[in-house]
Length: 218
Image (cartoon, rainbow, N blue to C red; front, side, top):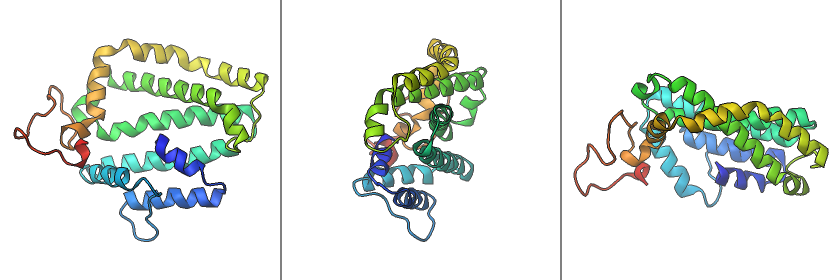
């Protein structure tokens, strides 16, 4: 997402940014029309598309819907005119980004006791992380026209205070180490030949020795 964001951010007009986003969405959804990837993203875009093509329609739709929402919220962040708006939208953007990986976690793992609670804490951590990223980049983003609100000390303090409610959940996410490992394995199922990782499956399992990985395997 960081690579995509940097490409989109280089476009000065909202219409141009929307055109880039729509081109990416059309490409991933196999839709006709203007399905164009930004220059320099062709390889990564094709690899992601190949991985999505191996998912069920439900999982593929989950990923694409979450990505579309992230695109809308990211643009809304640029248009935010109050610290309250920026706080809400920045944290929502992080939460939606955390949701992307759910499409790659198998059903058995998602039904594991504690997974729902763990994902909620991970989402809170992502909200907090996105807020911290905004605080760090705020002066540069304002100077480049990426944000409308000035990065005054008062505004930055208000934004920081708004993120404190996410801190306890983020700490709990870090403590859930055993489940964290299992979730991480599920979310990076691309390393195992393009299929969702099942509980107990080891890296490389299910394939012949020396078998070449597909594009989802990196």
